Image 1 (cartoon, rainbow, N blue to C red):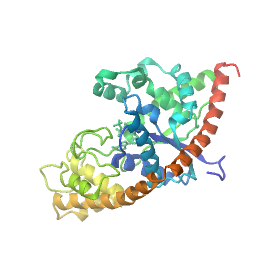
Image 2: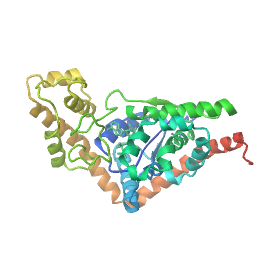
Image 3: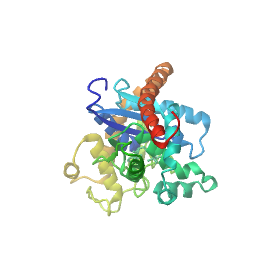
Image 4: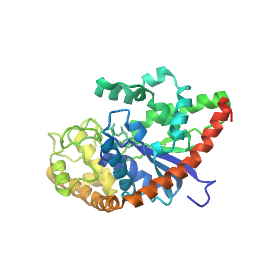
Length: 335
Ligand code: AQP
């Protein structure tokens, strides 16, 4: 990050600390971030301002944010080469979000799948933040003039609305924001629940056994894979439409071992689902073991974590304020 910063492209991504990180958060997001980090200038945030669109217990939220920073590092993000920061510690996010909300249309917000899903799940608390969060998300991305936003394929709509908002603003005031593109991994873009392979593996999923959390113990992981929903056939074959459970397990196995679907089909040609599930479970255990151990070690050093997120906020704040000043000037705020 320190060298040749002018020429390097910029990446911004984040995760809401709305629950414990899952295997989906790792394979769909953090693992890819770590792979991209050596080639890009990277900003990775704990999106705590997004998390409060759904009620959070304050003590749990604080603990989850700290755990998330530790896990980002344990998953391979180097705090010396990328900015790891807490969204609420960079006020420019809230400030730009307000400006952008004045360039975001009611109709486009109404079409957001996440708003429809989350308001259906939280009928008692359909608040304005749940509706206008795309303006905050656009601010998150545009503040850093990001070229790429690595997301799972469920989040593509967020990058699309961000592009629309940026183009609308640029259209009125001239070039202000770089137009970002989504970066969606080929494998692992959508990891599904082990109990309902038609639903995404989500932090807030409450169904027992559907989710693997990054800090789960080996026995629990193995048990969850042994109980994973498959189908009444026997062949390990990649066919998401007809074999969603097996295909999801193949996605996971492919992501953690690097094997292709054809190699996996060959490996289990004469074996049953029992052997296959066991192999996936064991491969996941071996992938998560060092992450869990490193996270536990880091959580014992809260001072070190505080140093990381303070330095991250400073680095992010510097870049973000540059964009914010430009925007304030463009819209006519007195300097
Ligand atoms: N199951 C998944 N498969 C692939 N990618 C996933 N991501 C999350 N779950 C999966 C990717 O992780 C990034 C951060 O997402 P987020 O946690 O901020 O929001 P989310 O997608 O709403 O995650 P959850 O787990 O479903 O959270 P809750 O339950 O709070 O709504 C994104 O890039 C996402 O694609």
